[in-house]
Length: 307
Image (cartoon, rainbow, N blue to C red; front, side, top):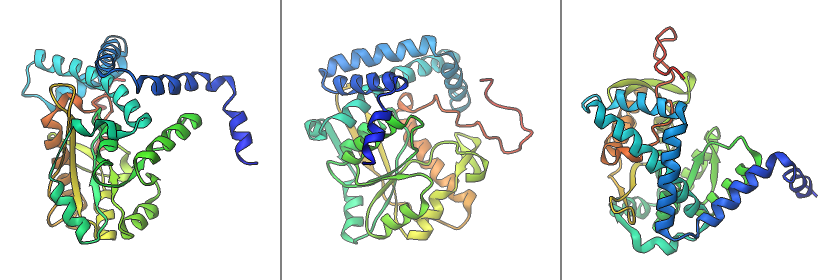
């Protein structure tokens, strides 16, 4: 009885573009890899040329985070980032709509022994993921080796939220709303690993200010809180597309030692440092379109973004 109204609801014309997008993702997931790359590059270049607001945000972030690069190198990194994230759309479709087993031969996974030790001890880990363009495909490839739940932000579009949640539940064990702290703690305490990405600006109330690429950035303080409440080892996970654009690398780093310390700023700075080091390996694959420095340390500080 409860499902019928929802199905009828999604027939409404306002959801037709969403149905079209979902169909497009399902079809594109089965395209030959070279076609996905070509389409992804084209989508990225179109966005780079016409998505002026996102390009301005990306340009600002690159300028702030890579002052050592000259203007030409910064501009190239901006363009490469759009291309990588264009390809990321097709990687996401692949991760959501296909069995990851078909890509096992393309994955190199280093540092598995670090997570193996955690599992041998019967503990649940807090996995630190990062918003690379390969995020959802990386999650799918990770599932070939280790099970995990995922913390996520629900989508505003109810139909796409349903599609996304079902897809992620096929990859991960359970999808947990980012506001559901009790759910995260409960899953970890019962021995489940939880994938968590603390590299975005969630506003002043959820954050402390800690350096990120040398800039005081609003940094989520929940990471240390979860680790303290659960006693879970915090496991940094690095994943990216290799230069051949055909294979992928995943790597677990050893669990963070002496973390958390109880000092929220120091703990946030530690996580930011781990994330920054991972980004520097493949900076073009990071989601630079996000207003990472939107929230300023002081309310009367000048805004960083003009858009």
